[in-house]
Length: 159
Image 1: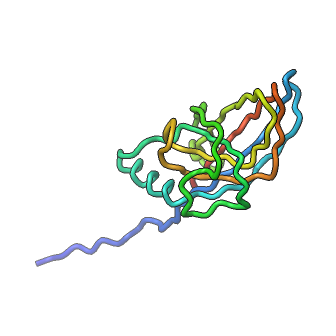
Image 2 (image 1 turned 180 degrees about the horizontal axis):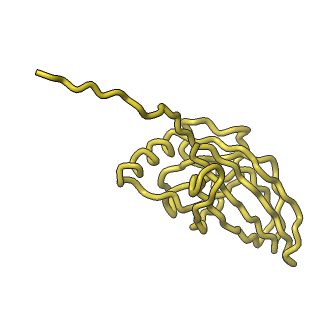
């Protein structure tokens, strides 16, 4: 009896998910007031679990960006929501290219303000309310005034 021997000729690659966030604050006239680019984030455990479900055709797609006023200094991988969420909206999503074609998911939303306040956190989630958080980011004070708009752009790169 003959047995065939098969060798693994493939490569062993690690796959990771990393994100960056851009913040652009505009005044009521549309003039740029403040810009913070390429701010790092934390991919949380609930987000990793939901990504695994999406790979097998289950789970809910991430479609929302939330912002808040929470004062935590950093998010931990076990966190499941923003500290003090103040607004959440459906983002405009697209597939972008960072390293290979289509390896980056982009989420963009602009939040309008009717009062003064301070934004300190944002996240990507998969529902209009509650849902699973994919990643979150704390940022030092973004002071907004009535009439301002804050454009938040998340880019999540699969490496």
